[in-house]
Image (cartoon, rainbow, N blue to C red; front, side, top):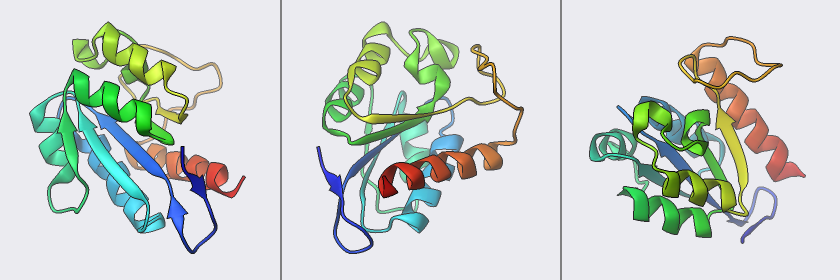
Length: 147
């Protein structure tokens, strides 16, 4: 695992996971790149369309599928993903039990973005727009990196 060392050298691997069309993942990648331009970020999609959308126009490497999720979850310091990615059959069935297990068992710090269509409701959750959820996810990332 890497460590955060202020505004100078940053030794973190941030894994962004998304499925379906990859729109949320793309927004997260843009926000992470703006906030932490020197951090190693990797985009991992549950399907090739999601991966392509996340990496399009960026310098972020991408990978697709179950093995990519398992491998990168093991080396990530921070994982940011839709809440459904942490549950088998989440994201309309795109998340296998193996994918969910790899994400949940990773020692990485995890940030889950609930999403309006999540089948899981968090008791303190307020309905937010996708851009507000991305801002909150980056705020949690910022807090974690300062700590």
